[in-house]
Amino acid sequence: MKLVVRMILVIVLVWGMGMPLSVFGAGEGDYDEAFDLGEIVVTATKSERRASDVTSSVSVIDREEIDASNDTYVMDIIGSLPGIYVQRDAIYGRQGISIRGLGSNGRRLETLIDGRPEKMSIFGCTVTQTLPLANVERIEIVRGPESVLYGSDALGGVINIITRRMQEDGFETNGIISYGGYDSAHAQISHGGKMGDFDYYLTVDEKYLDGHRSNSRYRGYDLTGRLGYRINDVYRIEFLGKQFDDEAHSPGPESTPFTNDDRQRYKRSSFDLDFIGDWDRVTASLTVFHNRGHHRFTMPSVPDLWHSRDRLSGVLAKTEIEVLDMKTIKDSVVVGYDWYREFGKTEEPWNSSISSPPYYPGHWHRTNHELYLLNECIWRRLVTTIGGRLHYDRLTDWEFVPHLGMAFHVSEQTRVRGKVSKGFRTPKFNELFLFPPATEDLDPERVWSYEGGIDHQLTNWMSAEVNLFYMDIENFIQRRFNTNPPPRYIFRNTGNYVIKGVESGITVKPLPNVDMTFYYTFMHVGNSRDDRQGTPKHSFTFMADYTRNNVSFSFDAEYIDGVYEENEATGGIERIDDYFVVNMKASYWFTDHWQGFIGIDNLFNTTYEMYPEYPMPGTTVTGGLRFSF
Image (cartoon, rainbow, N blue to C red; front, side, top):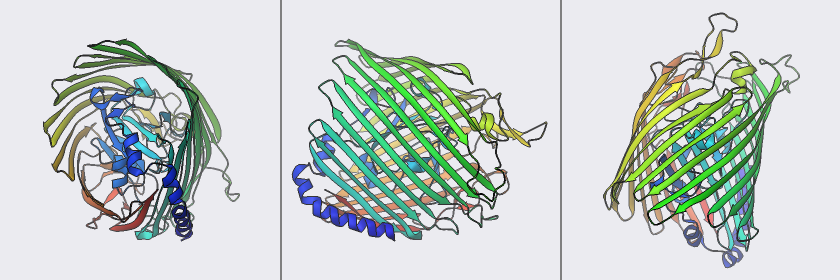
């Protein structure tokens, strides 16, 4: 309730500020027009390219799609894309994600914020609830290994979150306040401005949830800021900062629920400083970044106690040189050097009644040196990319990653492409040192990926795409029974297995105000239940949007089948029942500045689980207001 009261006061303040802000700045329509990048993407090449000229499998979600959805987190909104599966057990809080069968809480994916890695050093995972949509302009997703440009962890793919930035002189303020089932409350406000060579963008996002089960409360707070200054026609400097704090209470499995003070507390912060230069045929950037976390878990019902600190610091240097720019051929080279410093530390529990922690106290660090090069050549209708990355760290030694890609425009309506690439992931501190089943002699995980695809514009209102992929996994790290206990379990490189599948999609615009998209993904992962964890065999998604004048309506449906996951209560891996879930959202602009909306998740009150014995919420209605000045 305090959250709602605070946001009402903010709305009153913004209402009073609305007229002066609209005098100085562009309206919502002008802002979108100024920032419209069309099909331009940066993630797959580290330089701006048309999506049709990229040799990787790339998807882009823009601000318009974000606003039309009923989602509040980055991972939720990308879960509808082909090859991507997102798991959660509540309305707010952490989500698990996999791309093409690889994920493990983001350990086998590279998550970036404006090109800077967002990782927890001890476990190598991404704390996904630290990524709300408040300051997001667009999201670029590469499906498949992309270690040549982004190094370790980019086995399954890359998620690059592009934050908002003012492009034209003026000011804007946006906000959301909503309330829904299970006492879920969400408040978000953002404000940006540009005055000559200086620009800024600030956001605050706060969430509260009472929960659909006993002992499942949640609260989260996120603050971000982006400042930029153009020194002259060549140089620009930017600063990005972020602070996150949340606390989640865990209900536990239905058969053995947690009954005491079962909670998880995350505090994370980050900043990066960017220097950017843009000459006629050369662009260069230097990024200095640092992110850190302080995590405290208290779950005496298990018992499971945890207290740790981690840091990830680094320097990213990149240069793109335009070698040729002729009528029929263009050639450019991207060369870069990445330096990372990982640090993790476990600490004694802050609870004085605990005599000893159930893990090995200690601290660990690792320094990574990585050099990469990527060449892109465009000759008439043919685009080729070839490159490699050389990685070194003292724990896993040297690793070389090659890449070869091709895209060919058969006609204006048809494009075919293919790519061969290698991805790798170095073992993390928890797998090497932390607690049983830690093993110090683990080798890096590796994957060789082969993929091909075709997309075709069938008519002026219908397009289709199909992607085929085959990934050969080597040295996959999994928990196995120890043949010489104790401990009972131990991490091992379990050998090789294959992931293969098909991603397909059809986009239809039957009427000027209607857009519809169908996605179907088939994946065959390995030969055992361990290999198949968190990966559907079949997934089908349908999305439809209708917009006319001030009215918008969106509808999405998802069918998931063939997922295996570990049951926390029994320790066994079991198949989850297939499920079909429908969500919808309707909105209406009352004035140029105020919009009302209502969203319904799980429209048909489907009973289903994404994790065994963690039932998902039933039908949940959320209503709220959006304002923009």
